[in-house]
Length: 120
Length: 159
Image 1: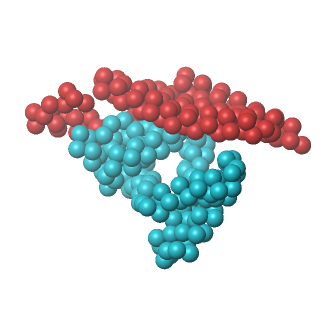
Image 2: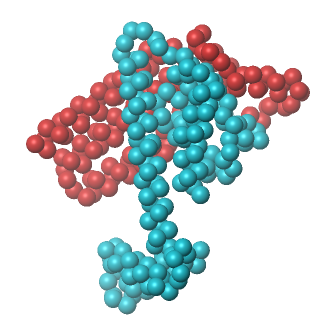
């Protein structure tokens, strides 16, 4: 019974990882790639670690799994925010279908007012 | 604050008294000292009840976030696996009511952690957060949604 549950969790986790990988290929621009892949990886990893914990049923494995999930959940958003932000400020183009860009408008307005945005 | 430190320190005294320095004994000491502090002070100032209330709020926050995560990843997964792109992405400015760095960090990380949204930048005055979102039907509505659902929750757990 518990083996089936472990199996299901591992399959679901691997599937999420696969979807994340496909997302990198399928999405049309950097920002959308960043916003769909990292999270699917977290969900996938959480499911896999949950499966390990259920399989081994030891407190040492469980605590390490929880700590790993916590650290991944802390660091991944920082990394994807950094990549997205530097891509944007570097002038990477948004996808054609983007309906509005309020950051671009704000930066443009600041430039017109002669503000120095070099510190960004 | 003194109640807080008392609650941290008194279990150590308890461990010294009983002579057993284990984690379980620390928690037993924690419960006993909480009870002692609860007797000694009027309610409201009592750390133990405050902890419980705070724990409830964090759990609330956690499950709310888990739900958001599931809904958003289902949406993104569907779009990745089907041939058509249904995205209507936009970069949106969210005016912030949050003030401290911790609160802003928590909100920005939550937004980045939810599939389909990504926090991009914050204004130099720290009053506007710029986010990139993948499914925006109406910009005003989306702004309102982020403020009402995410920012309000962050405020609730942090204050």
